[in-house]
Image 1 (tube, helix red, strand yellow):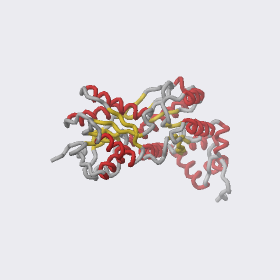
Image 2 (tube, rainbow, N blue to C red):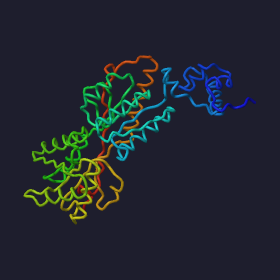
Image 3 (cartoon, rainbow, N blue to C red):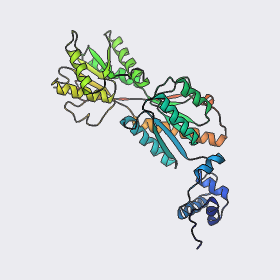
Image 4 (tube, rainbow, N blue to C red):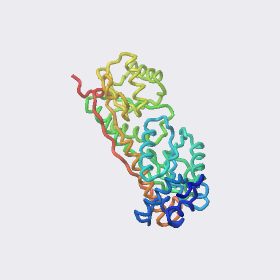
Length: 350
């Protein structure tokens, strides 16, 4: 038996598998135009020799690096970590590596991460943009030939396709549900500094539309940042001249902090004030009362966005065209939300 080299090369694999180096390259890049028998034989030799493609050499040759880049605002946020896991699942099915970076919702950091991924010649990029209006980001994307798909938030004035939730409809339905219980003073709680985010703006728009249709007065409070600020907000509004009888929280952390504040203040829910939150969260169904929420299809957002990106990567590889983002499909895919009815809104109340 031939001795196994300490650092197997492409030529070593080709010689051992009795094929040409071009065939080995095709196997490494997905196995297109390679017979099943040859594919299996080459893969076994690659595994036995422990061959690892030279990443730098592949970049210089313009070959696929079999990597995708993912830019999210935060890996600590359960929404984005779930999306990342879904993206990784799809990437593994295609035998690709997913490189995850975090922007902390900071535009310059986001651009820095994107440029590093481009320099590493990733085959595609998934991005949840820090802000949807970003001229610098759009300019960088116009110049790159790498396929890009955004998720959770679109990138305005670009040709980048996006996958988002129907935030507007979800918020509208949640507010309409509170109205159906007879609540007339519904206040909207959100996080400080997030009123410019696409998702939050869409949810506020849906809330305002439902309130407008009911010919009532909308009130949005974006002062929450922790449990203490939530307690202050609840206390201020309940002690005001026109106290609310229901709260619509714009994100899961706002819902959690509001729940904690209401429990700390011994305010019965929904007897004194009802509550619906946007986004489900752990323990929402086991709290007393259980929390009614607008549930997003989080895993599906990650899966659909990654699948769409792979379609673009494959199309680019087949055509050999390295066009700019201006030449690509900018359609937005909206996934519907679901209103999960529990007790905090008044459902099931005896």
